Length: 185
Image (cartoon, rainbow, N blue to C red; front, top):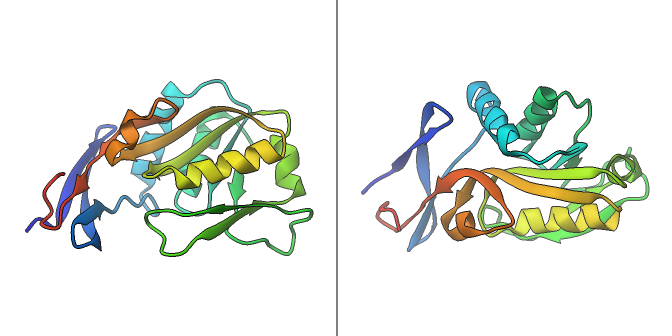
C-alpha cells in the first residue's frame, strides 16, 4: 500500500503523505506552512499567470503564506485574509459559510470593515494552496462580492482531482486523488 506521493512543482520535489478521507478515498497532504522555498517558487509561478490585480485575498489558514509571498513579490503592501471567526479588532463584520473536504464541520469566513475597504472597487485576486471542491473559493467569492470587490481571477497552486478541468480557476498543476490502497484514481 502506498503511503505518499512525490510532487514535482516549480522545479522542486516534495514527498506528500497520503491521508485517509474514507475507505475509498485518500488525499495527498500539501502543506506550505514552514516551507519557504516551496512558497516562494509557487508564488512566483502563479504570478507569471496572474491577471492584473490590486489586492489578493485568501481564506484562513493554509493560503496565508502564499498570499503574503505573492503580495510581496508583486510589490503590494496589503493582502486580505478571510478569517474563520471574527476578531475583537473587526468592525461591521461580513460573514459567509464554507464546507471544505479537509475540514470536518462547516466553517465561517469573515472580514471586517477595514478589510472590506481594501477590497471595495478593487481588482481582487483570490488565491489558495489547493482547490478541491471549490467550497473555500466560493465562500471568498461571496465575501468579495458582498463588499463590492471586482474579482479578476481565482488561483491555486494545485487543483485536486477534477478541479483542474474548471475553466474559472488557474492552477499550476493537478494533484491526483487516491483510492484506499494509495493508487491514483
